[in-house]
Length: 178
Image (cartoon, rainbow, N blue to C red; front, side, top):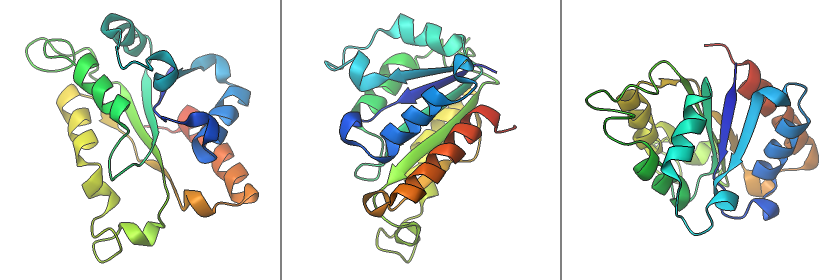
């Protein structure tokens, strides 16, 4: 299975969790089956090469959106990427079936605890509620949404937790069965 990991972190070099996940994927024994695609490195000006991105998607069976949850959503470039790349007639709508049957994993880090993302928690809504737009993207484009990979408490993480999370992440991205 060919896996495309779309990394959308506006400051990856200063990230602890997301950068560690990327490092682990690069070290992973199956890294030849994994393409790591850093959107902020590729498109610092937000001028996305739509044909290139669509070709990347076509060449992979599983797509991973990896990002830090920022203001209850994806970073701006990932949203721009969706707007530009997932076009009518290609990803959805009449004859828009290019992604049908491919898998999608949403992998994110959040600064707050898991308890903060509950209906009665600090943020007042669940992670599912915050990620509804991505769930709908999967549904509309025919992507099979697999369970999220999440890391809560990113600002308080210790090295042991970080290491364990990275190992689990690499295994999940490459080996998660549908």
